[in-house]
Amino acid sequence: MSFAAESFTPVLSLFGGILIGAAAVMLMALNGRIAGISGIVSGLLPPQSDRTGLAWRLAFVVGLVSAPLLQMVIAGFERGHIHQVASLPILGVAGLLVGFGTVLGNGCTSGHGVCGIARASRRSFVAVLVFMASAMTTVFIVRHILAGGSQ
Amino acid sequence: MTRILGGLMSGLLFGIGLLAAGMADPNKVTAFLDIAGHWDPSLAFVIVGGVITTALGYRLVLKRGRPLFEPDFLFPTRTDIDGPLVIGAVLFGIGWGLGGYCPGPALVGLGQANVPPLLFVAAMLLGMMAARITKSAGGIK
Image (cartoon, rainbow over all chains, first blue to last red; front, top):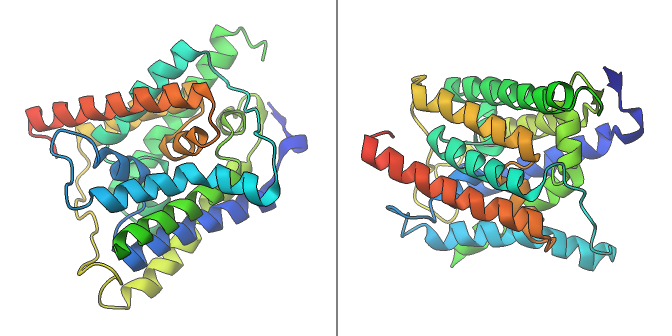
């Protein structure tokens, strides 16, 4: 193990976290709803999609998707090339697991990780411990066992 | 109409937060999860900032009787730890570790108009629908 000092961004990441929290507080103050992304998105989907909440859920997703566009307009950023950590087939499998798992477990990093922990929810504490352990174990296996520790 | 505005503004701010935090970069996410490798602990600061802000903000907001655009606050009320919660978290963690994307950052990635997040989101929506079908068939909440 070594420390990635060159990419460590404590201030910017703390600031980003505060904005994420402010967004969660805003959604509670205005619409009275938890800012859980998997819950907001899955409520749009069949079966039994949330018909009365369809419009605000879709608007929230539009807001999320628009964030990088706004960043480009304001900061004049060129379209950033994001280097992926996985091939397209693996990303497809990852997407299926993330979709299935977050709906089965009633939440993801936002709903359980931010809003749930902030509310001191017992279910969210358990979910966060389990998905962090599961994600860290997965990365360990992929990088240090399957890749032979070459990365 | 006001509820739509509430959703849009919150979603936009959430997305800007994810971008600033570095959560929208799968490399940074996996560098955080890789504690045995070249570890970047930045994302722990996202969690701390998000949780403290939300905890303080919720306390203030809940002092008002109701939200601005809806009649009631809606909170999850369950406290039981059941199989679907744990199994779901395990599966989510595997997918998060494999791709470096959780749901919010993947949607932000859509706005960057690249193919990989598009594929990830399409698969994620399929997975969500499959889980909804499984839950309604199995009587799981």
